[in-house]
Image (cartoon, rainbow, N blue to C red; front, top):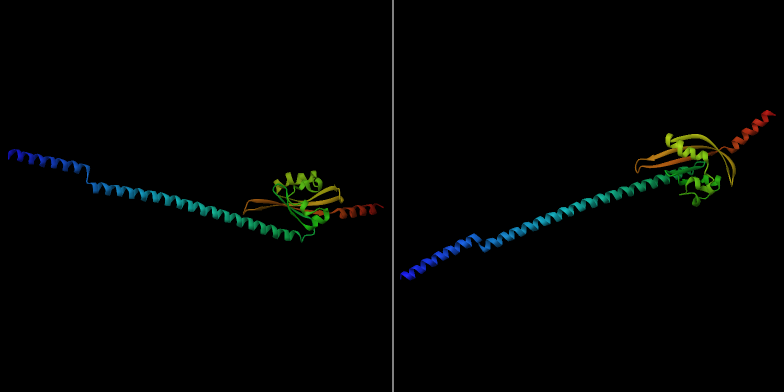
Length: 212
């Protein structure tokens, strides 16, 4: 009996010891539950990061779309303004040229093409000094466009005398204005040319007659 009782007490102790060890390790269900919680928390964090990144990408995308649309609107406004300006320019009798900041021809009036006998396809997008085999590479014009205009933003009634290959000697009064568009920070130059050759010739004839 005693040996059996002893064995029973030892079993009880061993069972108590095993239960304590299991308690230290934790219940299997509790461990799985904790792991599931950790996994859910990880998934939630990952989803938040992805959503945050996607949201940021959407914001950047919207900003880019807005900038592109603004540029398109600016380009349309510039094109409309140029077409409107060309309509006005073509109604003026005096030759007019519209230049960009690099002194390249954007457009010119009909009277310019008629008087100086040049064609639009050989004029537009060309540097003004290169027009008509460089017949507009005039020292006085260079001085006006490159030195006087940048300082004063305009000049009036500058007399220029030049012998053109196709039309001969011409006496001209040049007037220029800088036009600045704030929308796209673009500068244009409007150059007006008044041919006073005949007027000067009449003056000279009148002087000669008076002397006689």
